[in-house]
Image (tube, rainbow over all chains, first blue to last red; front, top):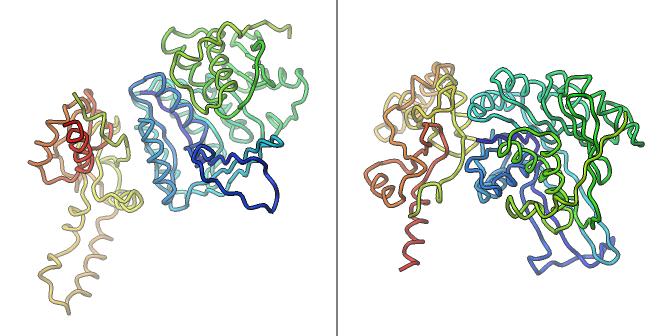
Length: 316
Length: 151
């Protein structure tokens, strides 16, 4: 069983239009120009892992209201095991409008989802017994209102008490507090904050400093997205840069989740090799970025990108 | 051969035998299910809790036999009784003798099990006894429809 945790899931809706003009009514008659899918960082990692044909992959988290039922039905179509706490409030909807002429990408990100204190207590109970069969727990994404910023720290401590490893993808205050629980693998995201551990990151030096600080605060391995590269912080103190060659990016959505899934798949199939697992992660992310896909087709197609990924050690 | 995994609902929504009756009622209401699987602390299936079982324990008589002027009295009594048991453990009200099916079971056998069973759904476990989800009569009909279309 592979476990992923998504506390703030969403229903993502993408509308493809010719031009995104203000005050103009748009009519979409062709289903090709409308995509509706379940979103949330841990969930997309789970869906990717199902594409690798792992028999049992579960997603633990909250879902709410009638939209929550709709969301769960969409997840079930991917044959991912749902392990959800049902809440009173409706889950969120993210709307993305993609226009051709001129090209534009407009997102309306909904952060209105709220859960009650009792839902959080139920989630912790469910999580404790839900992860029994898993070796690695993937915890990813934002947290809804009503959940304390220390939730990831709590979940990591529970996992460690049960001898499980944790792969954490988080940001902001939740990330900061989670580091003290010493997660094994950490990949921060920072599109909201443009900062890591409260420090603005602009230059490569800032990124490297942030990675090393995360290790100082408890992370064993750190992987930081750095434009189209990744900076890799090994447990032995070495820092590497993973770079793709000759790429043509047409889509960012889902690349990070494919990265997580391919990283974990490599570890499950071949044992732990930090650099090689990241090279596979990078290849999967590159495949998503060059195709109009949110999730991988399977566990093989992306491997054609492996030869275009190279890793160099950086002097720190 | 079609197996249960091909048609089941993969849901680990459950209560633990240590949970309170109140937790089970809240879960039933929010998940819109009147029956839930009960698991132990290892997530292994150990039984089922039915809304009916809880109701039987709080309603002194069957509503069908109650004279209309006694309904208010009975409802108030039920509320009082529920207040008494809501902090009790699910274990006390669960049913341990419940049929489960293995996720690798042949779908053809499920029809037999379901028709000989009053349950509208059966919980599904893997070879290790861990909960994996449930299969409903609607899923069985879905399977039968698929088979019919083949002919």
